[in-house]
Length: 252
Image: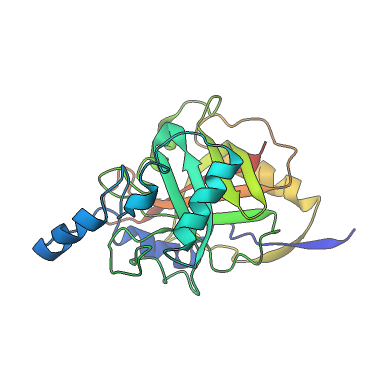
């Protein structure tokens, strides 16, 4: 059977540990930045937004054309925009960037300015737009912005009815269904950064994710296209232990 490059940033903690070091902090608005807010009004989410797309970026499912229009508008601000992620039930609605490394947008906003919230970004090791696995990182901000609401999924009893994820790139808009949510101790567990897998090995991978899910997992999806969201989470142990909340979803 032919091998396909499946970029399993698997449980990904390489580079992702950096997310935790700033997740509970919030940006400080100085007098100078307050002036900027007149030109760049704040949206519902973290970071600044050009007035020209304030109305377009309201939360809620959009058409493929509307999502692509958002991508085009954001690319006029920063050429590193590669997609757009929307999770309406969690009020997550952001452009997705991809930097030269995973540090590029860790503490830098879409305007390439220093910003503790950084950006939502696609892992820099993600090979190309056709890869069957996507890994997206985002900070867990104390005010609930960015991926701040993602760890709430760990409290669910079942993933039935869990929020759907909509992701748009140059290939169009795709809908993903969450089937596993679990936590990883980044200090104890090493991770696979990349690996070549047989297509049938994807099933074993999905089975592994389902077995690790904290909430009752959904049925094993047939789809061979997966999305993984990574953010930090402190659990009940406090800030002395850096954990990661991993969400795994399959294309519907």
